[in-house]
Image (cartoon, rainbow, N blue to C red; front, side, top):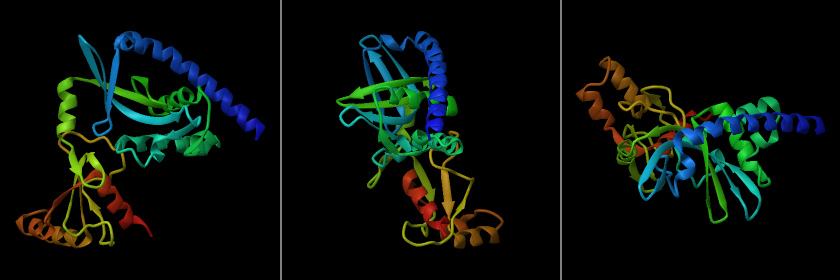
Length: 252
């Protein structure tokens, strides 16, 4: 156990050094230290840095949070209060942790110190990638991000405008399902393409699914037509509802 702990620390130190070197270039290129304020939008997963005379926008992946009150870390994939779809991208870190038997990459939350947030963000950055990292502090809570790309204000507003308001999950990405799919009964689950939580979508794509009976109707006519569409009566749901229904139908 001691050997594994030393092995992990050696690995973590190496990765932290790697990010420190990378981050210096990122800070200089985007001048991020010269913005006085920040604002992040969970629904659109965008971060805005701004001062009186300038601002800059980024897309982000949430890594996790560190509480200064309790000195504990929580991975974003375990944060049920978060509506950020890309939080599930950090499950790649957990998968890596299982292969290496690194408990800090596997456990959802655990005790840490003032270095924990940057250490784990460094590891997430090395595994998932991005153009840089950022931390915001609100009251006692530190929140860490992987920044994936710079976007314009117009692009940030477009992302926000494409979201829907779910009565259960709040403002989030949209998805489409047939009238028969629901969160209580298994009726089969067919998709337009294989999907996973936090998946990046092209602008022209949406999550789309239908039940086994709708698939039979679709195959009768070798594709969707007016008759099969009338049988399906496609309806709008949020992304989280979509994946809850998918998981229900795929459990044994």
